[in-house]
Image: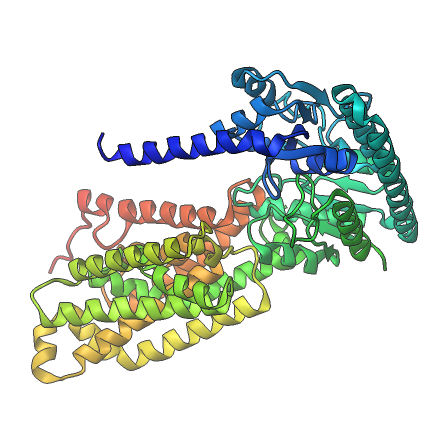
Length: 306
Length: 289
């Protein structure tokens, strides 16, 4: 076991240093921990410089398959407020809060949003029931406003002194979200009614579909990233032809050439990347929530308009 | 009814026609090579080669990112290096071809893994390189066709020394110096066929359509020409039947094609006219004078 010793020592040193640093950083600020990057963006916009927002699942991470580390438990233990999405997205978080021994208040940001079923079939490899509700409520901007209002109320009760600041920040951000909502509706209005549908394996857009009327249709056959059979491909092609679906967003097909083949055979356009579960890093296409929605709507309109 | 089942998939869907064309091209190029591989007891070379190309693909990736052309070129170079080094060692030392190839491919694989980990990426480079029979674009089809053409032309040139070396290498050494060049050219052909096959169709299909038809042919013919003809025909048959099977069932196309070939192989082992098991149990009466 001597070999493992220096490593353990190093780990102990790191933990000690971090523990020493943490209070210094938190001086006078409200520690807010969010489960993933989109919630962190909301919390930053509401909290402004009165809060210190960290996120457990960072940009480009997948919140569905996240496994918390001891470092995450430490963050949660130090937090005053833990913001979660709810709707079954972060099954691991209540246990983490309990295990960390923290006294944080848990805020469920989707409180008050009527849940919807997933637009597209089950996500491959996940159990039934887990997906009975689509947790991706933030894909509709009116819902995002509810998220923001919930976070604002929670911050106010956690830090009554900052009420005025939180209300001002929130009002300004809600204005931006309203403008974003109008932007999406105008963009969708540009698309002819018959063309407002895409074929996609994304199961994250049922709220988007309900709010803006762009249908996300699941391909028949191609649902997992295992190797497709000729029958699967034929079924998808027949379906696209029959329903005259103008664009395909099939990212989980492993072979890009296969997507090109389907497109060539159906005349459908191949759409770009849609962000569903997380923001990108600073240099990416979607560093903030507003950027993410703009990016998605641009990908959709450029694939769907004539 | 029969038309719907056997022909309609190809008239209705272009991707099926393209897949069929690719399988035919692969059969024409790969099956004759498979026959020589079998005769020289090198049938497992294909699988070794699939690993040997990793360092080349990795270097291609390091130099120009996820560029299919650079990675394929790198893979080709690595495959050539391994095949030719192994061939040179096998011809000039006591070590046999299989052992020297195993050595070189393992070293190559280790080098590839090292290069990939230095870069610190966890992208499965080989997965990126391996294609799918259902996704034939013009470029890939052209690659398969060029490959089949080159293979046939080169095989025609090196055919005589290659055949003689299969049956009587000592005799060839006494009458000609063509043995070594022919052998190396043959190794190069294997690499070209495999790498382009991987890129177009995936490992399973590229290696499978090379090796299985040759094993089938062994049970139906005694002479090399006959074997090559039967190998090509059975490869085409497996390709067609496998695609139809994959169209009507949910079996992925690559495995479906190989499974049909395997079924043909079982039939051949049992009923083949040359050394089939049933024939051995119930030998045909000898012609009596």
